[in-house]
Length: 300
Image (cartoon, rainbow, N blue to C red; front, side):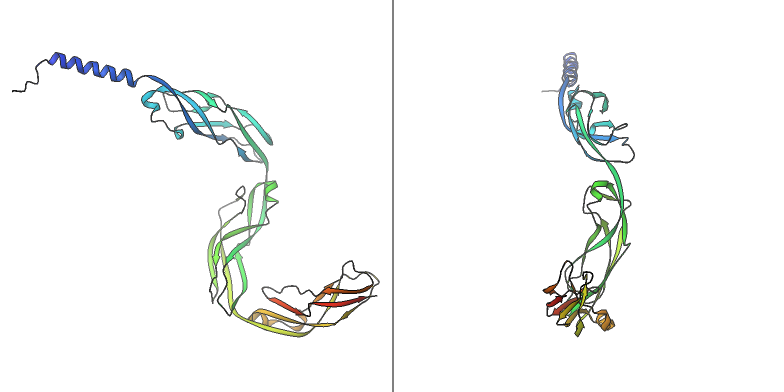
């Protein structure tokens, strides 16, 4: 049977027009639908304050063409909150539909919640020491003799109350596991509290000196007495103790006898006989074993 493309051309054209009209009618219908988790952007924060807590997102109801709304995403919208004139502390700020930016042709009809919460705190700043985060241990027979970091300190910004609770900035991990020689790395510096930040992004050069280990005995170190009350006189028995120091050989070799000073602290001790622990303050990275660990102090 022969094909006649022009047969009933009028009916075919009418069907095409009707189909097109139906498509435009359906696709052009105005509908309303919710858009969840629209981001809230806060602008014009007053100087001297930190925004430490806030409503992060809101839900909105939007009206527009069905075809446009079907492809709309939360990222296509933005709620803008002006903080001009905001004060310290927690406060609630009303949010209107005209504060929501939306694609052309879409109308924001409602917001949930209609009030956002913000918390403003007084800003602070502090210079904090940089503490390297060293993990692992050197190989057997080796020890850490010295650790240096450059820069030694950084400026930290954030809420004043949170800065006061942090005593140091830290670096990324530096491993010395199994090391037999000096380890040097350039690593990032950060702050343990996520609510704080560095004034400017910073890296630090961490140098960890690894040396052969050794030990040295100081067999007759005289015990001194500290914090004795006025007018009192002490007698220490035994008056000398042995101090075994362990650490880097080079450091041990430089020590002189007068630098090894064990002592007893008799703060608040009155007349009488007292068993008191012997204290030896660390010298660099050296460790100490004192024998005997306690002595008798007779205070008169």
